[in-house]
Image 1 (cartoon, rainbow, N blue to C red):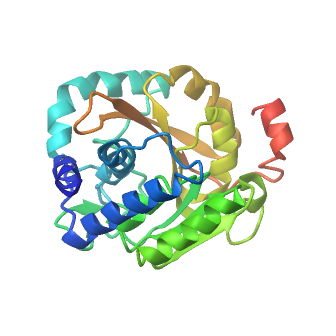
Image 2: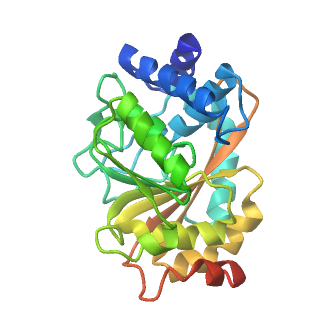
Amino acid sequence: MKQLLLDGLTNMGLSPSGEQLRQLEEYARLLLEQNQVMNLTAITEPEQVARLHFLDCAAILKWTGGASGTARPTALDVEQRTAGESTIARSENEAGGQAAQGIFPQPETLGTEGSRPLRGTAASTWLFDRSVIDVGTGAGFPGVVLKILEPSLKLTLADSLGKRVSWLKTICEALSLDGVQCLHVRAEELALQEGFRDSFDLAVSRAVAFYPLLCELCLPYVKPGGVFLAMKSVESEEEVAAGASAVKRLGGKDLGHLDYPIPGTEITHRLVGVKKTSPTPKGLPRSWGKIKKAPL
């Protein structure tokens, strides 16, 4: 697994340290061990965990631009540049002319100090010293992977299942991950609390949920100038279009999307970006029952 991870991350423009590779290997081992008694993942082969979980989550770190809003191309980006041009063109149409800047959409208020080095690596990351909340984290994806590869970020893992949260606390301790809080909460309730509402540089979710619902659950956490990234399939155009009114109501602006291949597979996934432009309006998010019954 170590060589697979090294090759895949290198292909994505990252240079993980030996310790980071060790942490990822141990994370996989503990995940598959716990999966025998708790439903954490349907993927049970170590190599597939590396590709379909870890490399997929690490794609978020390809957004390496500084204050200029431009992104530094990686080996993987060069490989998909031609195909990516048509994707960005489609994104411009869907987002009313707002395309992903460079390789990833880059909010002007993030990275104002320029690109900073990824600790223990030769790459750069826009998440250096940023605050991140992973909503509906499940087995810790993508939050724990991001924390391993960017130790400086301040991470909150939020999930509604107490057993998973207890396990995540054990995982963070076993992997010596500092600056992580694991919370057993309902997302729509935590977002109403001071210190969480309009407070994070990034909210991210890999949860399988309808995009308009995800927007109402996640955007309230993001401070103005911050970003919400939803990890979606490449066939998500309709549900993303259905979320346009929710994005606007919640004080967001569509940043378009990026389709990215997972190294070592024939699978392509999508990141959908929203920039928070104003504080969350009063009364949002609503109760889960109302969110499901009448999406914004």
